[in-house]
Amino acid sequence: MLKDKAVGVPQPPVEVVGEIFRYIFAWGCAKDGKKWCYKKYGYGHPYYAKSDFPCTAVCPVKAMEAAHEYPGSDFLFKTHKLTMQSPWWRNLYADGWKTVLKCRAEGLSSTDDSAAQVAMGSSSVHRS
Image (cartoon, rainbow, N blue to C red; front, side, top):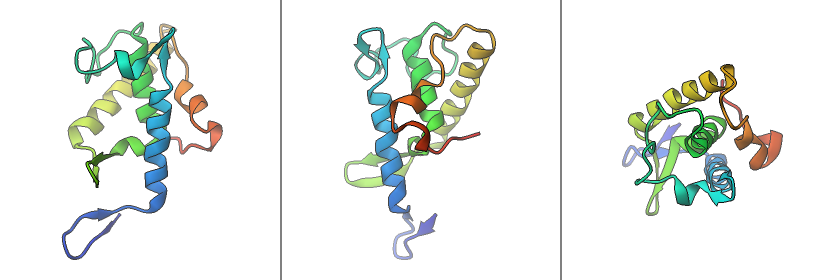
């Protein structure tokens, strides 16, 4: 990423903003049955911001899928300023993805790679 010489603020390419919106769209479309995950899975949810959720917890699984599939999850808007997610969140997403893979390997996950299917199909940038 380029740095603004005046203040040292990351200046990401405009494509990054598009990836952020794609990530938000994928997460915003995730459902647990008929309930929207973004309404159900928040600060009060027992598995919010945890990477050791049970495989049957649909919304945490979908949150980690979306964070894994969309590089836009590395960024957030703080009011009008685009910033990088903290290392804490990036580590949480990485550890949460390991939980999703473990659940899939054990056949216990109630979802599959659904985040990629939700927002713009196969044109998303996949992470390894």
